[in-house]
Image (cartoon, rainbow, N blue to C red; front, side):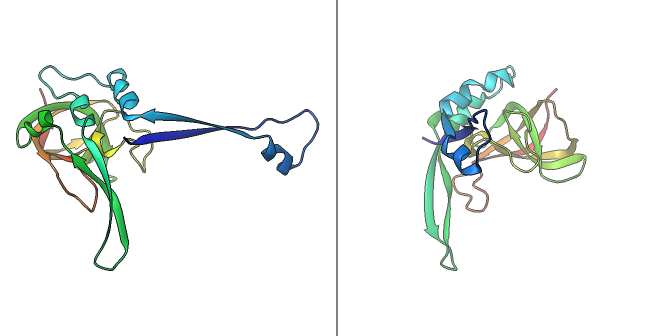
Length: 178
């Protein structure tokens, strides 16, 4: 199971002036762990599954298998590969309907390729969800970027191995659902 850790640091300072070393001695660190189940339980607070659509829970149940191997140059390469559940395997190659938020891949207003996920954009450089909650999306016609959730229809591809980007899913020929 993959864990997400967020550390909250609290520095307790007394009324009298202290040295930095003393302040750090009194520092307390609290770590809260968020599991995949916790993350998935919050998806409905951000995006609803469209009628007849595929729920993000189906994608989120894909297990992530960590690996490390040597590349052609002898360097260690690590990443994750998917272990798809049977209910998701049935959707491979099928047209699906999914609702999510766009994460742009280039600086243009219109996007031809972007990432789709269940949570809104929080950082312009990194989409802060795990690989089992990101769909690489390629649209028929470029779409204007939106901060609002979009509902798309397209052909789902399950990607068993993508050593370059660790992509698990691709949505091909996607278009806005009417």
